[in-house]
Length: 109
Image 1 (cartoon, rainbow, N blue to C red):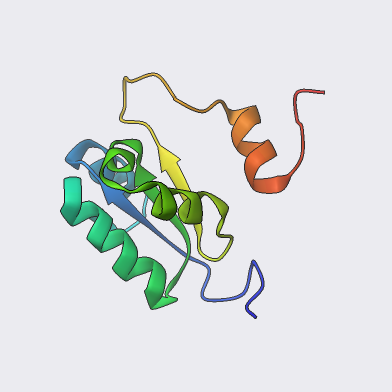
Image 2: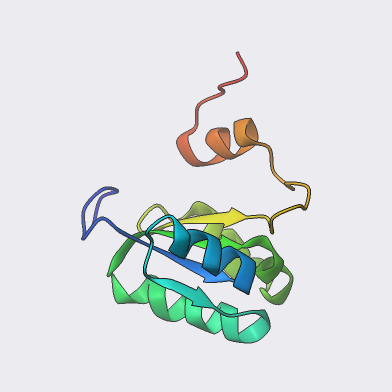
């Protein structure tokens, strides 16, 4: 069983142009412009590739995933899948809620 932290340590991003471009500008070359069903397919491909330790994914792709797949991606630790909002949109999940879900730590205390 592969533990969290093993692997290549690489990061990638999947999402709309604004998200992919923003991450490219900060130096993450593996930024893919995909939306809808194509974005979900790319996420499945990249998560199975074992090339990445962290995959940032646009929150808009959630609506194209069934409940089973969504539950899996929210609980898997390697690669760690982080859903991010589009720039200018409200974040559906607060940072403290995300930390509690991923790390099991309540940072609000």
